[in-house]
Image (tube, rainbow, N blue to C red):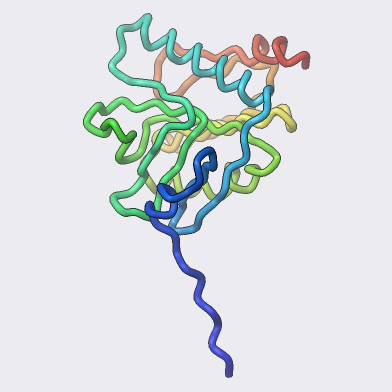
Length: 185
């Protein structure tokens, strides 16, 4: 019987050896190449980041928001590296000049045509097991915002007409109808 060929697992060395301008994520040793985001994706990311950053600053909060490309090393190994569209880190001990070591408190992924399976399945499982407290999947094509609050084991399903409450804060709401207007929805 023929032996099945083993697939070589990737490491951080593979991420750092990518040609200039190419981006990839590494999940459990599997390398996933990333396409550049389109204008609508970037508009959504900009508006979400701006809302979150303004809120944190207005409260003199200690959490820090970051937007892609920003390195997140989910586990203490060299086989898990992601660049969430937006992440919020509340434990400053996780932050270094290289990025975040450990799970961010809140991650937002904006679905692109090539990232649908990753965002809905692979990253959902990975983020939950890594210790992320809250995960949002923003899907413009489906007019859907899925919220996973892993701490309370609660989920929410919203549209771009809704105002959505962030679970890690008591009074932060993101009004997606304002974003929809910018996108001519």
